[in-house]
Amino acid sequence: MSTDNLLKEFKVLLVEDEQNIAKLLKEAIGDYFFSFTLAKDGEEAIEKVKNVKPDIIITDIMMPKLDGLEMTKKIKEEIDEDIPVIVLSAFSEKERLLNAIDIGITKYFIKPFDPEEVLEYLKTLVTKLDKKRVFKLSDTIYYDKNKNNLFKDNKIVNLTKREKNFLFLLIKNHPNIVEVDKIKDTLWEGETSSDERLRTFIKRFRAKTSKNLVKNISGQGYLISPQNI
Image (cartoon, rainbow, N blue to C red):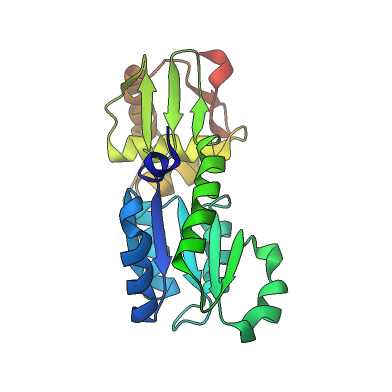
């Protein structure tokens, strides 16, 4: 697959409060990607990460409500620790940026920047990400993180949004056990849920996928179990 075709499989979130810069980047490189979503501050970006599930974040640092570095820290601690974050930085912020490398910034560009340079870096990045996006569960079952789809015998398994969230949660935490309460909070946020409701949900999930895909660890929780399929 060519790099340009590969870009079409990735979702980008741009977090930038300066409309002229956001417009410049979106017009210059937005059409290369599956989606190119905009957020004007860190708080809005966190909601977009939860709903859109981007593969890559590009962010400014200085923004209202929640700045780019605090936003990055929050996303990596609470939502997705592996998501690559590219920072657009004013030169005056360089020292602050260097002191925040431990947050997990992937790359930074100093303003003013050339959109073509950003695009060339993104081409290199998606090539690396593409090698990590497929989580193999068996010889016939695999999960594509970019597409958020489960495939069985090279056909998409028709999962509900809640079932996809459940699968993503287990894969994200693999090989660790996910506690029952965490699963309930993720799947039924704000709703009343019982152990029986969860067991019924998992029974239906196994019927669609594989009876051995999800393993119950008595008294602790559940984990994804590729080796048992």
